Image 1 (spheres, rainbow, N blue to C red):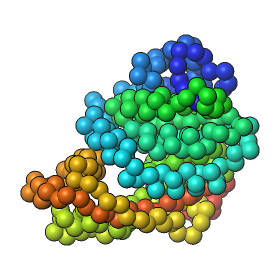
Image 2: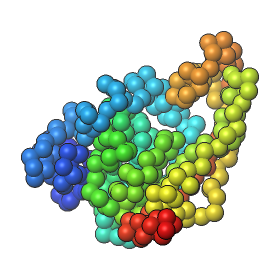
Image 3: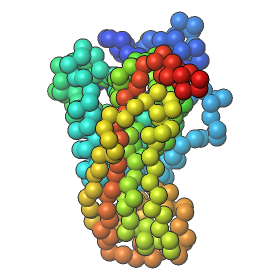
Amino acid sequence: MTGMDANPQTRAHVLACPVCQRPLVQQERRFVCEANHSFDLAKQGYLNLLLANHKRSRSPGDNAEMTQARQRFLDQGHYAAISAQLNQLVAQHVELQRQSVQVADLGCGDGYYSVRLLQALSPQENALDFYGIDISKDALRVAARRHKQAATPSGPQNASAFWLVASGKRLPVIEHSLDVIVSLFTPVMPEGAHQALKTGGKLIIATTGRNHLLELRQKIYPDVNDKVFDPTDKLAAKGFQPVSDGPIKLTTSVSIPSEDLPDLLIMTPHGWRSTPEARARLLELSELEVTLDVDFRIYEALDAAMDTDAALESDS
């Protein structure tokens, strides 16, 4: 399994310059477009394609503490069932018989799900280019290292991984070039996803269900919010149609030992939403059995011209 390194790629990828949107070409440890915009590959293995004027803060995204907590927690296998379900869904909906397949993980974080997905897909004969995209440099450093540690010399040589600091609003790929975008527990910006996907390309989203981590939330909040986010209407307005009726449910339970509970808090919003007293009570437990309740939804990107025509008809 190959990745970004000091050697030029032997085949074309679909990376685009964030300044002018022209294709990027790798030249040793630089990526350059025809307009001579240049981006250096960081020594940790990621490529920063997030322009300064596209940042909302100096260091956007998860910080090092949150990233390291997530890495430690996920490496214990507590969320392995979520990863396995994602891998299965992508394998079902990507046309692996194509000569080249382009897959992106939007909001890839520390790369736990990305690397496992890449491993699940890469034993195919076709070429696979995988793009792990996140707005956090700290997360991408871990993701690139995770991928490097998982790669073996005897592994498939037809798969490449690119770890990219970028915004979901402006994905740094050539328009309509991706076959699949996956996004787990992170907001999706429909315009950026539609612009990046081929017509018929799939967007696979995972969101938390009503009972996700219910037992943890009951321990730290006096009132538990049971609202569920459904992005279908928002996505439909931007050129996506659902592939199946309703979400594909994953429900199971896992036992979290006391030593992993602090990391679970840090990697979720519950760490800063809860009071110090509530966190202290939770961390006194020897273990906590929690429900994993995840809704997977799959959408197909409609043709951009067709979508525009439909919008015009609805306004007439």
